[in-house]
Image 1: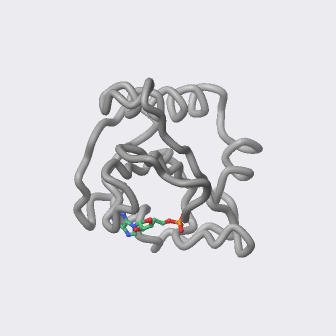
Image 2: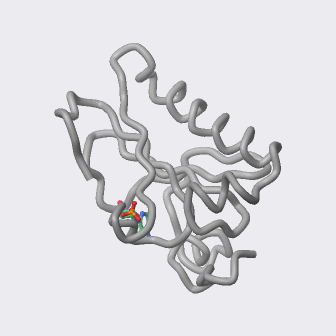
Length: 120
Ligand code: AMP
């Protein structure tokens, strides 16, 4: 685990079932759940089950299998919500300049309306 990882962050608590989430899908290495403060009609977060700080930490330190399962779950969320044709946005905020609030790597999937040019 990255020495800067705070295991009291809210997504770590969700993964330990200490607080609830609205689960959408999961596989062996990743979990998808609804964002508590949705910015669009579809706003789902996908997180790895192991502790990674952000995209860079994940890509530097996760196994190929974890990467495969996380990005597969992102695509499964897109498929489940039938937004492949109309479109969607994938965002991963990282660090201070990225305005990352929760320090456990996560991917936002947003869709269900025209999202404008930028958001979050
Ligand atoms: P970020 O700024 O990329 O770190 O985004 C963190 C996201 O987590 C925000 O969109 C929040 O609305 C969302 N969030 C915070 N707490 C929870 C929670 N308990 N369940 C689901 N989503 C949450």
